[in-house]
Length: 134
Length: 235
Length: 247
Image 1 (cartoon, each protein chain N blue to C red):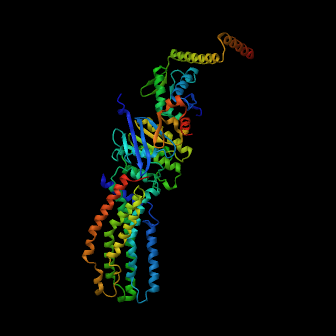
Image 2 (cartoon, one colour; image 1 turned 90 degrees about the vertical axis):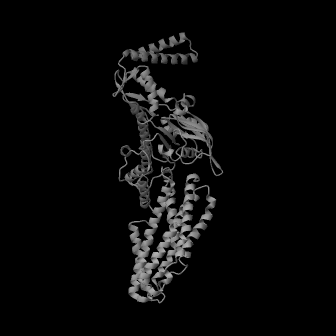
């Protein structure tokens, strides 16, 4: 599905994967990237379902998990808001970073690289980037 | 867990024949409450026959069919808003007259809600059905169904042969209606790619029986998009 | 509220797109044309010694088949317009749904018949004015029309019922029974002719010859079994609509 922008967040849903996970991931990374700020209001279940043209139950499931993670809080009669707790957001960033690193290391390992080689490659890349940036 | 309590529709080894032709054969499936369930399959699979039975038109030959906790007869059909397959509307009606017809003859029709839907669909009171495009007519008929405050909505190919804009408007109205009310929706369509994001559950039918059924998200995790699953089964 | 429902259903039927002949503007155009044609016919053939306006009543033999046609059209329309799904899903008894169609078909038919009779009556007035005693008197024409109308009303339930049953059977698994219904229609349509004496429609001259025009009581008594048959056929139609339709 094509990319949709809703309330500061960007969604590009792939119908061949579970949708609720994608909604969850994309809200989390929007928060981690700072695309939406702490304390910001996010779209209601209905609004997001409308914008993405997906089943409200799917959105609700994602929102429930966000609430469970304490990334969001629902204020009665007002809507759903991102937490103001920086610690929680930092926690998400770390988790996403860990995930990315895990994926990277798994991939490299499957290509046959050991830790030493990986370190070397990383340093080399760093060096090249530094040169380019002067 | 009392499984029956959560099932809006339950079919158990259902069979139905028309003369010598067996339209539905040993069909078993369940549709949970408050879900949007899709019935998918090639033409002649028996989808329309099944939906008609659920709506209370036509008793099963064999097997058990329970809709909203009871046998689907005409009396039970009062709690079902059914959009028939290949449905058209009375050509001599205006939008206003269509609403009047539905209001006077069907149960649970909410006039205010209907007019809200007509507005968002761009339908005006004095528009004549005979002058409408297929898309407008489809929007009118769906609006009439959605305006009924009933627990079960059965839509047989509501997107068939209509333009993209009309289809998008209908999808939007369905999302709104579903988010607002505790309703169960059963919908059959061939436009899988454009609508699969709506489904909680999918039931794939072929030659009168169910070949695959399951939660949409689980099917996606296991097999890919519903469109891909359809190809795997019938391609 | 059942009463309100039935009335609304009939109203809906009457406002529907009927056959090419529909109530309203076209009815008057049709009537006007008929009058014109008839006046021309009279002007041309009136002087002929054999002319009598009651000849126009021979067309009444067709009317029972017209009733059948209107009933067929009333039910067939749901399929033709693609609204059969909506109609069948209405939470009202088949008696009401089919009954409304029958009543509406009858109203449509009657309006045409009455128009026709009125035109012929006018023609008779004109003819009497032109040719005096040689043609059927106005009173005679009125008596003739009244009785013909009475018999038409009498047999219309059965012709309506055959019409509705015909459409229902055609759309069901009982299709093979159709030839039987054609037969029934033929018999039913001809009952009218038989009841009206098979040709005893005209009377010449003065009021003294009115005698043959007043049909005997036993003709009317035949309506009782005819209505019973109509009720049976109507019940059969309901059964077919409930259990046997194959959409």
